[in-house]
Image 1 (cartoon, helix red, strand yellow):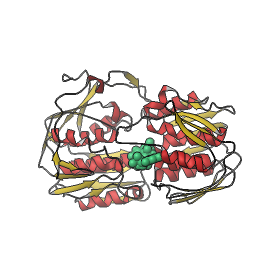
Image 2 (tube, helix red, strand yellow):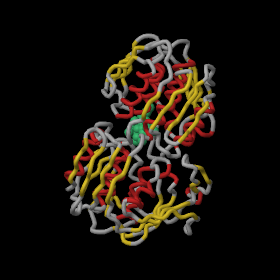
Image 3 (cartoon, protein in one colour):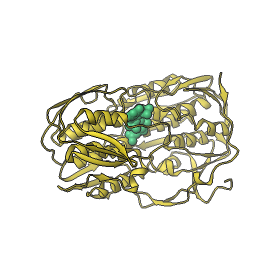
Image 4 (cartoon, protein in one colour):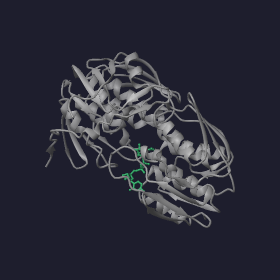
Length: 454
Ligand code: UD1
């Protein structure tokens, strides 16, 4: 039996924080800011995608593995990058952020304690665990923060470290890991967890002997870390496959590495074109990382032309047709794109079924879509969305990065001006999002001020 979302009668003021934070571009963003999204835009033009958030933060953590200065280029100018820089500084690194370049100087003596307040502000902070255990054979790492999209345990990270010979417990809000020595091992993951694969990989590169990680995550961002680790002197076979074989080495050296393009941001633009019946050329992202996504959008009626290696054009002439989506680990349809699948379905012709298999709380934002007039209901991990001709504007709240961006796309298809609150979530993942949208034909104003409704 499906249930319809009850709209919340009120919200806690605590959900609308008012702190100011500085973006990497030197811009100030207020947690009390909102976007006014004017409906009725058609997006046309060309947009460049920069490095992947879910890659750069892990590459920064990987710099802990080698003494000296590691340079990472094509870094996105998003809030999570300076937050991760603070995490690395807290264990003794010097980090210089200069435009799209991050220079991380790792000293010979690192602290094994990563428990600064920055740890709780993003999920990827937990990825210092593997490098610290690999390098120092011990670590105290505060439990991470990040998007509220469902339960995010660390059991597989811990199981992997234990298989390598470390003890791992949770004490006073931290993962505490210790090892006399790390020895290569056969590790089977229950689920191809991105974070667990990364942490185990980054510990195993400095372990004694050979580690095999089976049912490893195959996301392109994992292949990107494998490429950088290999440049640093690691011996890894099977990058991009579900079996990673790591032959431990004694030490690694710093390197210079360019982050791969952000496939999630690239896909966001593809959905934006499909929803606004637009015509976008998206540069800087490998279209093969989006094979399934682009095929789904073709089924919805878009004409998609991939360019060799680094981009694609997408043109949507008519109202999109309803398509079903099922989220799964890569190469399945990414859970991070599920809000866009829902947003597209709200304005498509027909009924779509969206199945969320990765995060149980990720449908929470549908309640905000309903405020915009979406005809959407959920039953467990399924959502049924009947497309409507037009959404209608309302004040809505972003609950995480992708849900926030999904609401922006929905606002572009709504009559009137949609107010989107808690936009600091969107700033955590999308560099120059509003500027790019406005350049492509949208009208979105960034407005400072508290919501009238508490
Ligand atoms: C990463 C991405 C996130 C994306 C997710 C899945 C970053 C910073 N975040 O998150 O954007 O949505 O991959 O593609 O890269 N799980 C366990 N035990 C564990 C680890 C994970 O049960 O020890 C479960 C999680 O609860 C979740 C699933 O495995 O249901 C996937 O999690 P995982 O792949 O680890 O995601 P993250 O690395 O946290």
